[in-house]
Length: 179
Ligand SMILES: O=P(O)(O)OC[C@H]1O[C@H](OP(=O)(O)OP(=O)(O)O)[C@H](O)[C@@H]1O
Ligand SMILES: Nc1ncnc2[nH]cnc12
Ligand SMILES: [Mg+2]
Image 1 (spheres, helix red, strand yellow):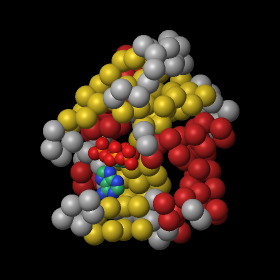
Image 2 (cartoon, rainbow, N blue to C red):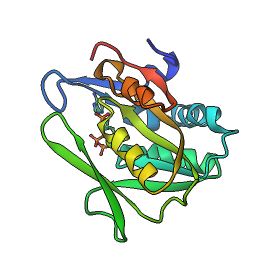
Image 3 (cartoon, protein in one colour):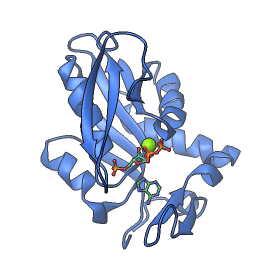
Image 4 (cartoon, protein in one colour):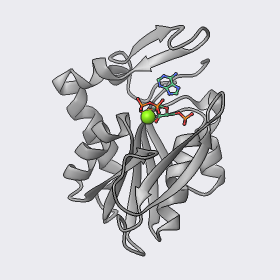
């Protein structure tokens, strides 16, 4: 089901990338379209305009592209959740499961003040591993999560349902089912 057909048709779907059986949902074709990028950011921002968001957290790498634009529009600060070993100051880390093995992301311990209102943004949610790890980190440093916002949800992979079960408000602009 697609909430935004005009955005959905601007996502390029590539079968069997990066490995057989995966349909890769490529947002570069959406982002390179001036109207597509603007509409995407506007739609992600709209539900949170009155939410007094202090910080937007974006997950490396694609979440930086979306999260930076959303933070700017919300007059919020931007916090990068980076892959292991990239941040220079004191960090907290969280591991998450990939299809094979694990990965880890980090944020700086001083990136969010206790009680600040935080919006998590990424391009896509699949299993929810990366978003779940980012949410753990935000709460570990004392942030208060106001919501999680994704351009694309792959609901069959269960990540968005898991986050909702954990009590988070989850929104997305496009759903691809049957992946
Ligand atoms: O819900 P999940 O199962 O965790 O999958 C979603 C994540 O996977 C991709 O990131 P990835 O780290 O693969 O690549 P990127 O560095 O290009 O963002 C995507 O951008 C999401 O961040
Ligand atoms: N099917 C998919 N397409 C693009 N990015 C992804 N990240 C995890 N699953 C993905
Ligand atoms: Mg990513």
